[in-house]
Image (cartoon, rainbow, N blue to C red; front, side):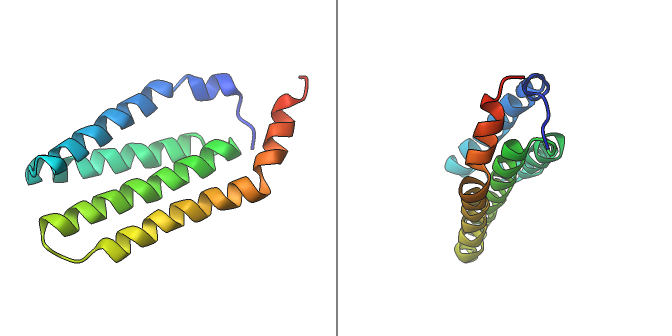
Amino acid sequence: MSEPRSDIASHRWVENIHILLWLMKDACWALVWKPGAIAMIVPTIAVAFFLLIRNRHHRSETFHNAAVCAWITGNSTWMLGEFYNIELRPVAATLFITGLLILTVYYLFYFRKDRKEESKPQ
């Protein structure tokens, strides 16, 4: 599970696009522009899962991208609940907690191991 760092950096632009998409979705949500916000759900989540799959060979990136997928899905769920006056916060909270648990597993069991690997001379 070790992809060269340079390969990860080569698609950093996709991560930047993901931030743009996410900000557009949340700006539409804050402005209560439902069509724009709802339209941004699919590309935002799709790019999050693309990054998860693309980085699957690098353990740290995989765990962090999986947490982001849970987070953006929870964020979108919460937004839809607010738009349609449906109590979806428990579902969103479950997704947020799932993301936290994913990162907890990483930091408890893999973080130090990965740091040691990264600091080894090549």
